[in-house]
Image (tube, rainbow, N blue to C red):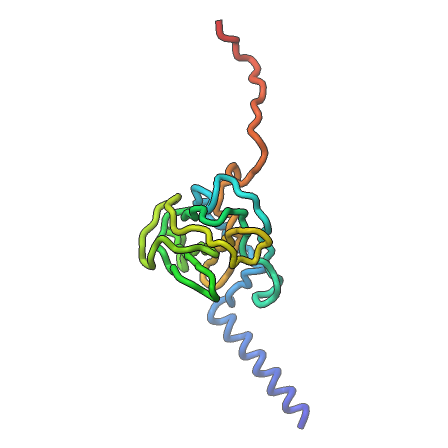
Length: 190
């Protein structure tokens, strides 16, 4: 009898594999797949000009494992929080006692990219169109998971969390000061 149960289980597994192959490849695992890169569409940081990143993106090894699904940016209470790119407010309200604003970014595919900011006192309502750099709220005092006041900035496509820093162009992420290099072969002004 055991052999029959094993044979039934094996046949069921083969049918499942055959069906998923016939209908197309199964959905790739977002944590291990080579998904297309996030478009570099951000024009500004959500807070400040170059805030200190208190905690970086730490993707979990599996969807339900521990990790950090965003970045924590140093900010002062009451500081303006800005949309990093144009879009439409997807959510503005409270979740688990914290103010949250979420913006669905324009022209980022299906499902569209969505940024989240918390803890934030919303200055916008659901459905509001926002431009890059437009204030969507202010940093709430306390209520964050940081040792100091901060803004947790997240990025999602559907239910998949992504690194929000990938929205920024490299020159906006780098911290080093600008350096002028010597120009050779150019005559000095008279």
